[in-house]
Image (cartoon, rainbow, N blue to C red; front, side, top):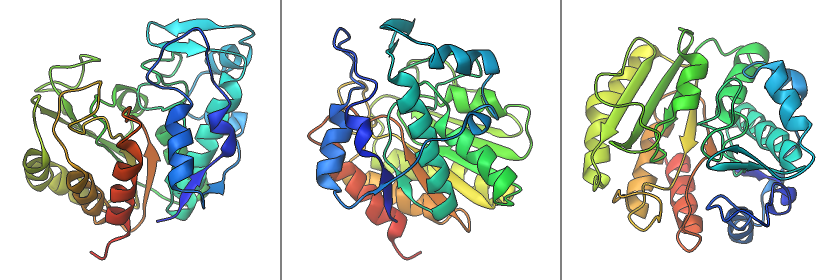
Length: 286
């Protein structure tokens, strides 16, 4: 699986006054580890408006100074450029079966609100593009970020053509996706703190793989967060590099086409190796 990104992610959406775990250094270490990445292009307003409200998109475009969009999410004048670029890279990943290394992440973004470091729903925008432009009737989103993919779920909750699957630590921020919250089109797999490779593999065997195979997607989009690693500072899970390799391998077997988009992962020393492990898994023979 090839990598798509953009050199500008290391300069855009930077806030000198905010000490956020989601910062340009994340992409700087990834670009150093994967120097052969291809540069993507920004999404259009029309593409972003397939999942976000016009007023919200206009508000992001109009940011003129440092603002707090929610308690965890800042905005600066270059946030709009970064967010459109992240969505565009996710779209290209869906088109070509690539791994989009982007920031800001997207799986918490709601129709009209930023949330949890996320501005635009990158995976959601890519899913809509695949349906509208690539002839894909059914899309499955598999999210193994340590936090519940509440934004992606909310954007597609009433759409039978998109299945959203989220494996995440529970109880944990943002407080959604707990036991008993699965429904038609929504599969939530809350896992206790300390869960590692064996627990994730069991969840895939018993819940994720049967649900996605029954759905029969034409495209699987993976919201690939690496903050469930045992050394990530924001969570309390215990996945290893081998665990992420196996998650990616299993995801690649769930549909005829697979692409991935970066979400979380905040330990700069481990992040490149975890992405590399996932790339190996996505590219492995099934």
